[in-house]
Length: 162
Image (cartoon, rainbow, N blue to C red):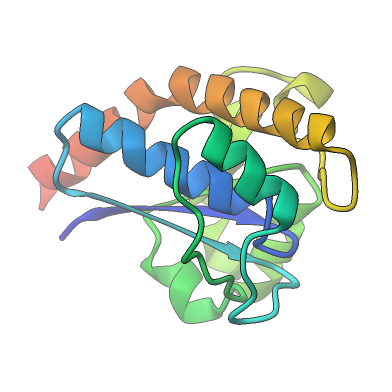
């Protein structure tokens, strides 16, 4: 059974799609075949594309979000996740309202990376300038890189236990 990392934000058009694409790239670069990465939004509308700013910033970094389709977080999707990483603290109670027993596997991305407080949150760039999207991208990239060893360690532990 693969280790499933689920990234969650509000609308699943900016931050979590970027995190999903970046994590997928980092996992592939590391050669880890038993890690699955996806994303969802607490208030997402199923089938929306990535926001214009997210598309532009992804292109700047060689990441393809052109065919991305948003989806709303559901109990079954949350239950399928081995690890749920949210973009800011307000998303954690949103996840837990959908699946209360996901408490021990739901973390703010920055806290999971060992970065406490607002420096570990990824502010929502939706409706903001292209520069706000660039800042969000860089923060996600940094926090994911700081988290990747821990994610892969959890994946190996699950594989060893399974």
